[in-house]
View 1 (spheres, rainbow, N blue to C red):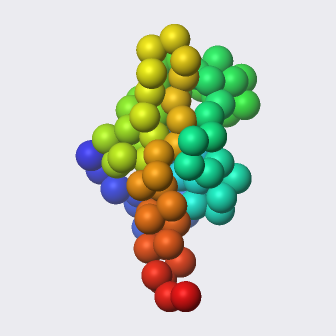
View 2 (spheres, rainbow, N blue to C red):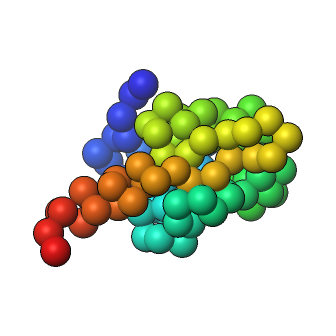
Length: 93
C-alpha cells in the first residue's frame, strides 16, 4: 500500500483522507476500545466519498488491527488501538 506523500499539497486517494481521519480519531481517543466507528453510510456522508471508498478505509484499519468488523453490527475499535495510541504518543508515561 502506498504511503502518504510528504508534500501536504500533493493529491491523495480519497480513502486515505477517510483513513487518516479515522486513525486520528482513534489515536486521539475519540473512539476507544469497544466503541463503534461510524457506519459506511455515515463515512460517505461526512467525507463525501463513495461507499467502496469508505469500505477500503475501514478494511485498512482492520488489516492494521485497529478495528474489527462483525457482519450486521458494524466495526468497533479493538484493544490494539490503545497500544497504537500509546506508541504514537512515544510510549512514555
